[in-house]
Length: 576
Picture (cartoon, rainbow, N blue to C red):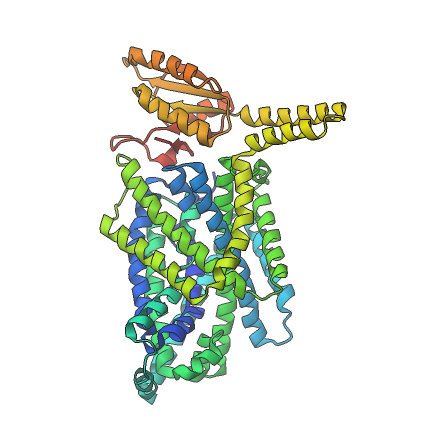
């Protein structure tokens, strides 16, 4: 059994991503909100506080890898779910490339001979290899980086605080005396929209929750929130106390290094630069770990090609990080190292993912009321949090309208791949008809091609599915059939009732299933009664006996008295 992650290493993996934001978000917020940037960053911290409960409820109820994808998969259709998955993948890809490149820029700031392009690719390759080796080994590297980053931030804050106390508050007073273009309200709004970049990475922990020990996920959310709430506003406030606003723009890419140079000299600036390179590298690792968990889940659900699931001796799905690495390198070369365009993808993608997570929480409350969960968010908190993120998306589009075009350039091709996987049998049938029509004169070639396509379709549809039921009526079972016919490629469904000693099933159940079998002739329904106790052990046994993966087994939403968490069932999906 794979060793589960404890609180600190799990926090380090996702924390490196979100905590690296202080390296750039302070300068970004100051450029829009001026002397009120630290207030904008506190507003962001408040929104993130609301999202702690939202993420806690959703992942607590459905503690499976996939984040927003997993939340929507168990509450709505696969086509809707695929949008969340695509946005998350784009967010991770942009994070990896931007973080790797920016990290190498910091090293270049220390050593001008440093080859940025080659070093960026090498860095991506290193973390690809670490992910293939295994998450346990990856967490050791992430933990070391996280510790150094926290120490560096405390050291920088201490020297900046001492410098301000000994040299006075004149710079801060001068900054606050400056007029605010457009008024304070506009400055706070624009600063808030820009500062929302500072919480990217908050969704990462949800994408590898299955690799964490029980109860750790909630703690990672708390720890990430504390880091962001303390350091992001603090760095902006210290910057305003040390540096005139007119000079911030000239040092935007390396603002914290410049703060270190002002407060402590070149040695402190060098430490901050080294820290920046390391923690941005840690954000690359977060992307690889997060995308590994997400893509593996998507592939198990047949949204992506099955060849991605091939595992090595360590139990890692090594093809996923390899493909992700190749995509990141291709994006880096396509943009020729000019990553401003990818920032547009990054911003809209991860804010959209947070919005979808909020909607996933709403659907969970409405459709899965009985599903046990360790904590609950209030309706008011959801409305405020989701509304704030939507407002940030709109604000970023207003500030940077070119982002939308770039975002769609990456989104549409990715969605097309997912669309093909979700509708591949229909597309193959269309191809079959087209071949018959276009190549009718070449009958042998047509016949051979047709046989190949038909075999592929039959192979896809040969996958059996299982629905566990007990006393459901025909209306409920009809919902099951509607879901399966709309979302899955199959011609066979086993409807299974597990009876404990002394239990019986309603007589109408068998007749109801016969009715559905006639109503859905395209799916062969087989009804099975088993003696035993429904639980993880039985599910594993049936999966092995019937050669049906557990994620192709469905149940209705369990009530409060259900003795197991959904995660204990090994990946069984909720579809009603």
